[in-house]
Image (cartoon, rainbow, N blue to C red; front, side, top):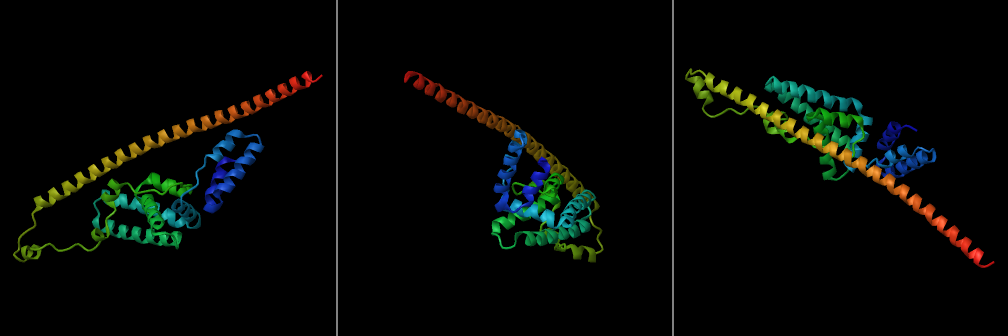
Length: 257
């Protein structure tokens, strides 16, 4: 029995069947004498409703999930190049695809679950690591797009719309006045500074997340070891109880002779 195959099977199954299948596969591994594999299977977490929906979506619409990943790359390139028109067009594509996939995945679930599905799909666009987690199809919890990064290059509906004319702009042109090139240069410089700050914030957020993930994995390993020691101690206690019972029975038999 292969752990990766079992994990894929469990996260591809209906959420209602997850626990039963997990225990069956763990029991089979124990019966085969592979206690380590049984423990790894037993530690697999049941996904939340929204995570299960996204896992199933990955398997039913893989091309669209890949499309989210490609949109993320294109959006990052457009933002780096300060390509406003391209950024707005890609943002509209992202919005339409995420909405379509959410409707396909969520169906008649609660608004909260539907929102978590949307956030997870947005995270797959915003963050390459989240995209890899989504594409793997083994989510346990919903994901959220990193706030700093999302704010930097995922325009809101208002930002994505046509630019509004500022009062007085037309009059300046009618008078034949030239735009203030220095002001334009300052604006571009400010945008580059905001982009730099957003990237630094994203890097810090990823670092904190990676640290938290490492700590979680270390804690899970310690928990697994503790479970193993507990199981061995229970077995030792059961064996000792049997020996005591046998000894006491022997004393009783000898005393009655």
